[in-house]
Amino acid sequence: MVLDMSGVDYVSSSGLQVLAAAATSLPAARGGLVLCCLSEPVRIAIELAGILDAFAIELSREEAANRVHRQRSPSFPSPPQ
Image (cartoon, rainbow, N blue to C red):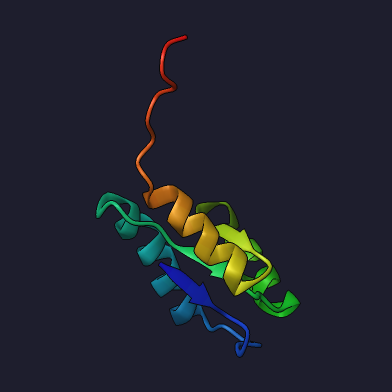
């Protein structure tokens, strides 16, 4: 799942709690959460909350979507040579 944060310039403690809960529940549901387009104040708030490392973060929505696609694509071992 991609969460485009481009319109967000502030996140409350409640918002941080929701993000933290999503970071822990989505991987268990075979998903993941990729944040993109973080403003500096929001990135700092997430970092100060100690949950920055719980997320994949990309600069653009396109990069985030590509990351989700790569995560969902099955990995096949290389054929023997």
